[in-house]
Length: 130
Image (cartoon, rainbow, N blue to C red; front, side):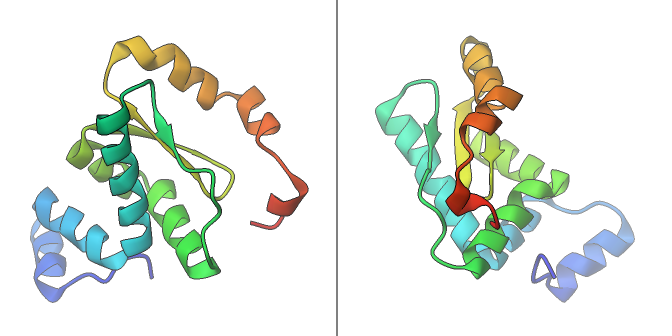
């Protein structure tokens, strides 16, 4: 299961519209490693500036890796996180998360980061089974 959905949030979904802030809070509590990773990268981007901030350290265990995969592979979760933090998220392999500002001046850098070439260059034998 990806998220620990409360009965109240499930009831909202069954009725129709879901409050996005409540959904984001569900993501925060259900996927704490992923939340902390993205939060810290957003903070780093705000402090350091630049085109993007990224993490290149593999998660400490499979549970943490799974959280990153669930957060970034789900269009709904990823989209909600992007709107909440006001950034674009990018993902390579099973752990390299990057945050980019919502600024068209970094579009080229974002395109390079998410390119096929960048994906290939970011491979290593240690990451084969991640």
